[in-house]
Length: 395
Image 1 (cartoon, rainbow, N blue to C red):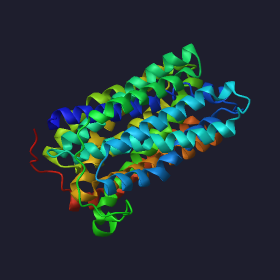
Image 2: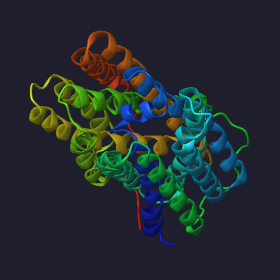
Image 3: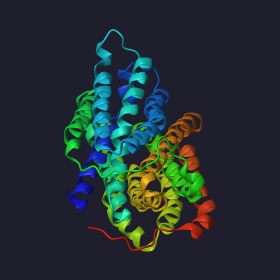
Image 4: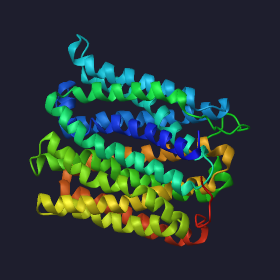
């Protein structure tokens, strides 16, 4: 299989994993009510938090195991199948005599622990491909963007049929991944050290902290939008789950479509401008979403947010591969996913508590301000270590 075909196939796995995840977002408040929750913001926050807490804990074992085995595909299959089981168990839980929201959260942890294996290792397999890492990470970004762009409106439509339908759909998607994954070409490098910490590379290459920190910040906003953004459009503008899903797509569509070209741009001009300047502008666009006086204004700000997000993400991912040694890419990407999941958790918790205590407008200002402060503080460091401007070959 050629690198181009492998890139497309692996991007398809990343797409499917994100699609399954995002199907649940547009009506998460209705879903947690079906699963036995008695509150709205708090229960939605903990339901999303449970999955990403599992991401944080289990990204390391998946990455270490695949590096030690010198193979990725069997672990992608296992993660997909177990993740599908988790979604199906959540879907049938309300029909059983054991139904409770506490048990739903436990199943959510199990599902997240499995799903991160398929998602993280598919990203790692893209990193394993030789050639332009800007293109590889651009393909990853497109897959992430398309997964979220299609998952949000599709999830909204599924919620119109029934609150548990998105769970069944997510499980079916992961079954499809498990069926198709064995046909992927495994290019995992051999000779990797065993049982390494995903953050061990930071001691040898401290500059890896830069993409890790920005990955954290970007995922803070993603977690914030998945919870607070969804409930903001649902409550402030009175949107249905399907209309909420379509509104989220105003962000995800440009975010998906522009990832690959912006990844190529980052190969040509370096990583500093897309990451630092993009983050500064992104923070302003996020504030605009939460302070727009009309739905149309908020939707226009979501489009701008998607464009700027597409500028940042592939450059940040590519910077990880610029800095990590080839035999350490599995754990380096695992580390990136860990800090990203921690960022998503922080976005859920900070956003949820801030919105509940101070209102949506204040919550948007707080998270947007954090993103801008990070961009300003790290600019001098970026100017010293930017390594992404180089001519990488590709086929």
